[in-house]
Length: 407
View (cartoon, rainbow, N blue to C red):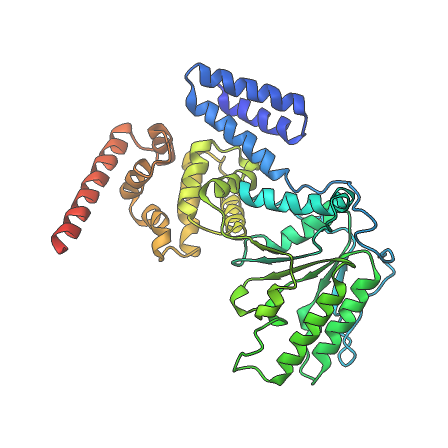
């Protein structure tokens, strides 16, 4: 369709406003494109509809959590957190507006459903109690670094319109005998006094296995105190613990949490959605975004944001418009700073050192990329693109033959 890039931009702007009638019209346009045989543009609109829906899944709402779920006084700016008695370091940070200044998280469909279900439990306690069950009060978020666990905890609190008491590990952990256990007790006493969500980030620092031979007896005292306070808080307030190292946690700790939610590395479709959001200001075509996603590889959401920000900085400093060729040049320039040595970063290595090989690998990666997009990105002829495709096929045949001979 002529001028489709402009139409796509208008559709995205309209969808972000959340108007159901506008969304219905975009869906009608997608269906008509599909019926007319324009499968590529129809798929672009489908991806856009899914992306905007995903981005809106955990946007903070003004729905008030049931007052019977979380009891206590209201936290205000005049309330100060408890401190370590010896060092005067705060044991927690109070965040009255946890959604402010934080981006909306983006998840795959399975994780979105899990988190939406969790929030619904906390917002519809009356319906649960009518069935004779209580909502869950505690959740453990675990998974690799940079996947949005802390952001998720803050956005859930924002959705419930509750402030956050965010534990500070540097304040809680002390070198003085018995002080860490006392600090944990003081933190929970404080959180139990107010309507809030208690977030325990870097949870493994407090909840390590008690049979760890490298730890002293103090660890057992700390974990026992933690378990007692988690039990005492059950039914009084919401608690979210976060760890990158779930394998270090004491087995007894897991039983204290009603929800165990793994927030893992995003899949390919979610990574594409993330880059589409992070690079929305550049208004790149969908083919270019798919190529960037292929180059970036299996990165966490935090790493993808760093990648996107680095790309925008490179383009800004070059003074060029974000054309396909400018994006390819900027990407090639920033990749050596991001590490391209691992096997997972093979596409990035090819882009840096073997342009023809990279073009061939893209065409054979089943990404649905048009050859004319690659020709624009690398400012070359269609014949060069075709040769690169043929050369890649030859490489693959030779590699298979080598493996066969070796066996």
